[in-house]
Image (tube, rainbow, N blue to C red; front, side):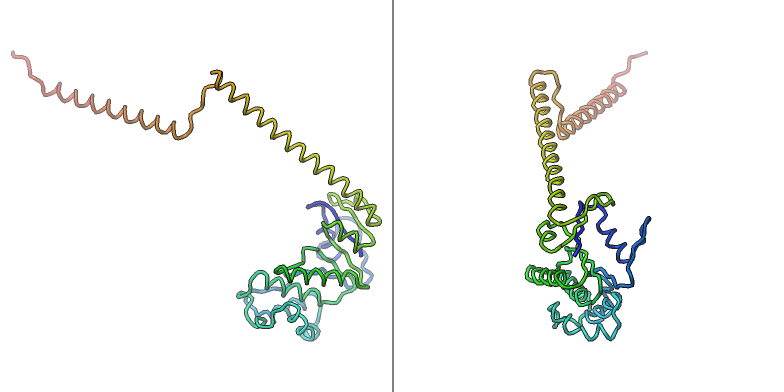
Length: 264
């Protein structure tokens, strides 16, 4: 079993897709030597308007099984997914967890020479996640060739005999699990510590700047900035005063025009 580790966006999923033949590499070649290679995916072929049974058949055929092969495995697929009472209902009536359980169950019942596993395959509620994690562990510990993508250091150390550390789409280091994971954890722990220090320093600078501004306001060096409600009230008062002044001038104009006229 080969493990692939790296930060988010390092290129782990791209490597899995290239190995599976979903995408082609920009450079170099991937030799498959005629073996069957399939990624385990919980979403292959799931159509909302079809029943769970029809989706299981379609999904299995998309993963390379014949219709006869997938139909022969349906009883075990349905039993593992715990969907006996719902298998002939449309997928539209399934919850997200039920759909994931169906897809996962199909995926682990597809035989292939090389299995590509993303640890995030575990699906459903807590009890089913435990069950699916155990199923993945059994696949990994079988005699099949497995490529495992995981962020879990203990999982990589326990299940893999070779590890590839990917950094920005390039192999940074590869070798036995302990040596690679020790180096990987040292680098990322130091990066996490550095990021925490930067955040702490930024908070301290902001706090210090706020203190300086408060002192300057109290000393009269910085005029207090009115908030929005105060500015709005001031503007409304000015508009009201201008309106009253306009009305008074208009009234005064009327009195002048209706006042007594001088004799000839």
